[in-house]
Length: 430
Image 1 (cartoon, rainbow, N blue to C red):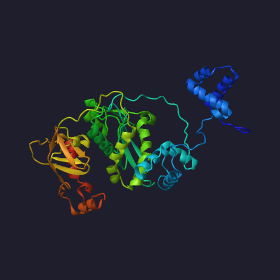
Image 2: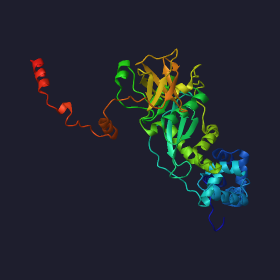
Image 3: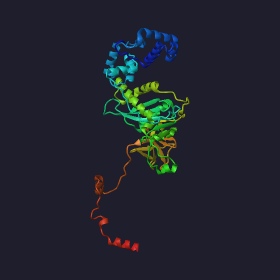
Image 4: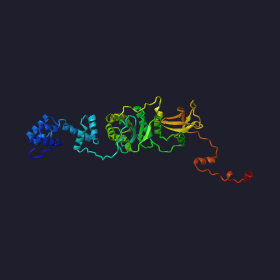
């Protein structure tokens, strides 16, 4: 460009040097073509344009021209208007997906990112990375499954936080989740039960040191005598299925499930808003399909095709696996006490002897079951035990009834001096 500035790329500046040498006779077109990495015919075309137009002839002809694949300005304006109205806090990638799925606008996520930055609706978010040594994924599906709970305002109401119980396979990144009010033993059992029904019994679970999964109490005398380690209710369920529990030393150690929490906190919150869901029950009905969409988008193939999940053994009642159980002693009247409830064992062939131990199981649906020698015991629940009839004086009965300490009257035999009785007692002692 005469009398002005000419903007050239690095490749164009390199071609300018080659063409200058050709014009000065220091290099042939064939040699310049080899250096530029083009054919001899293309080299001749480049030199011809350079000879006719000068330095400007080396500039790409499409520079400054709109792309043939660019979107019309009307599409850009309507897309940005929809983004401001409904997707104002969506990232460019998720916004591009939802605009296509729900609005019919097909815009590449990088184009969406460029439009949002130009309009001042999005800023590049750069985070200083922390140095950590990467752990290689497990090679087999089901070899290690990470589990954790994520507490968040899922329904975008600060006062109403809920917990997302999430499981992520280490080898593939497949996820399965349920929502509950808190990270409880019941919620952990429910999500593991759903995983077992869908994929099978995993080899190991990677969890943190929360009391739901790991207990640090000292073993009881019975556990010491039997050589057993203290387990939580969740640990007992895993032991029945042969699942190893591996505690993580830090949140970064189970980073795969932690990063999946971020995906849910971004995409799941916005999905709940778009669907108008505001309670846990409705969210759990919609959650399986959402998780399948995440698996189809983000899951990867494991390095090995072998699946480490084990099938559920035939005849195993999963209700008796995922339950809360405690050991109780049968009374002389064949009553078992459990959480201030009285369970009267009825006469039957599997009658446990008095003073023997039975296992009381509380299933996740709230029903109570008594187990003796791996067989269920029939019982009926009674409201309260019959009160014993005490024969006491009316004065003492009134004192006991009102909760006051009983003080004997002055004429009580304890307070009356009896020399005859005292003499007999001294004679007996001597």
